[in-house]
Length: 220
Length: 220
DNA sequence: AAACAAATTTAGACTTGTCTAAATACCGTG
DNA sequence: CACGGTATTTAGACAAGTCTAAATTTGTTT
Ligand SMILES: [Mn+2]
Ligand SMILES: [Mn+2]
Ligand SMILES: [Mn+2]
Ligand SMILES: [Mn+2]
Image (cartoon, rainbow over all chains, first blue to last red):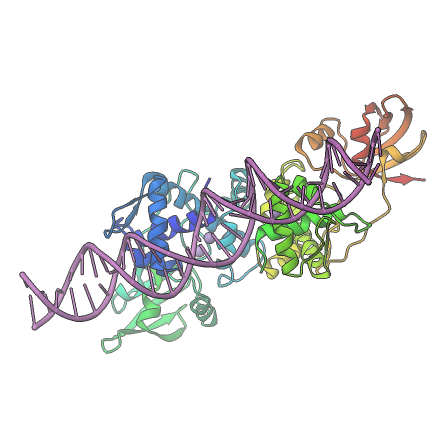
């Protein structure tokens, strides 16, 4: 059985690997987990001994098949608990991350099955991220970063790439939620900011940083 | 902030102190936590350094005011989560203890407030134990052990003193739940077993061990 | 009061993670 | 191809808990 530290390392490596499954640098893991590179160096060696990661000195770390399954299972738990916190306990989507970070380590397969059922088998968490099933499989629907769209295109917000309180509260403050519509009105080369129309009624300007953390689907 | 180990030690000491608040022996704590006396000896010294317990070598351990508050708060969380598991997720009362043992360590005051509200501010957990409020206060209604009653007395089951799967499943198997009625029909001095009438229809014989773990209120 | 057994504490080790400081390796530039 | 800087690893310590084995203390029984 894994410690919660092990689970957090595997989750971090999974997240940093990205869709292309490249090797993850020691520094990147340290940054993600707010720890020091030397600690990570020690840890990935131990994870490699347990067969959970592939690690070659100075060349980064990738998850083994088994390590990836564990990571996906922890992510499943994290996201199901997030749904619970928002849907049942009425937390805001900006308040749930730290709590889910703890709840994801509770050990009980039956608990997660029952929670999943209680929630009505949700497909996505409150941030729009897909919830893996028991086998670790999940769908990814085609999504774009808002700043990859062109002037005139219309889109629907389907997810965010950033879970920080500050960012999510900003979105709340301008009444932008999953499902909201966003139309690109103009693009400013100088600072790469966007002028957009939100919910078909409010004009806004989004900085590049905001725009690239908004995941949207294109509306034909 | 406490580690979950610290919380489990304080909870064990609270439980073992009983209503009279006597000093708890090192061996008793070790037994309760399935650890070794030498480990407990080390730990209570550390807890004393932190001001959470009063400890005098060779004379046992008691909780400080602060230690008791922490213990009560952890017990509150444990029991609220148990209610959640039974009421919302439909677990049996024999399956919840180990899970609540983990959930009780989740850190978030807001989470417990919201959970309490979501559950409708329950007064007792699924085993009949009272749930302390935010300040650590709780009611204890007058209760008797079944084997303290006399022949002819009628009673209602209001709690159990033992949370083991085996015991609780046995109660399920004879359809004995909180609220069930139990009338004492006869008492056998030889093995201290009891003949009882359950739910006004079924005659049973309870061993002394079973009887003393059933908490009842007297029906006048 | 002496002897014994049970309870408790101490000593010394080990595991999991983490940190700082120092040593290496890797890589792009001149 | 050597140089300097960045990334990474190694060395040595430390904190929290736990264990076994050995030393003490306490309490009970002759
Ligand atoms: Mn976590
Ligand atoms: Mn999320
Ligand atoms: Mn616990
Ligand atoms: Mn209980």
